[in-house]
Length: 142
Ligand code: HEC
Image (cartoon, rainbow, N blue to C red):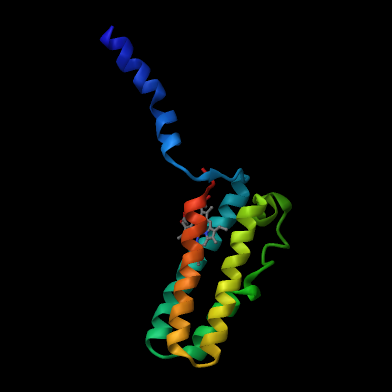
């Protein structure tokens, strides 16, 4: 009897864990997931660079990095890839919208940095990381 109960719990465990993860699954192809992961590592590197540049008061450089690596200048980079490997078109609309929000936040940061306003740039850097957090808490790919 006890063994049957233990077995039942083992079987139900994965379901329990899945229920605890409140994020919505975005069904991307393995190729698109690989593209996305690559892009994400680039996002993290760019963010790391921005923090150092802002701290050093190198705002003009920070604006260039944000524009080219994270802002609207970074959009559409996967257009030459086969459809199967492009994450954007496979994303649910709400998730895609969050991606655009991220590009927009980066461009707004770049504007403040270009203007030489360190305090505003720092505030907008926080708004940029908020878009990373928002998407990661709402969506998963696995
Ligand atoms: C539109 C949603 C979205 C936004 C916005 C977003 N991410 Fe992600 N990120 C994801 C998803 C989905 C994954 C998981 C990809 C996978 O493994 O299939 C991920 C994975 C990652 C990873 C892990 C990569 C790995 O090695 O597995 C890092 C690091 C990361 N994101 C950083 C960032 C940073 C930094 C930002 C903001 C500048 C950001 N992300 C914005 C959706 C997003």
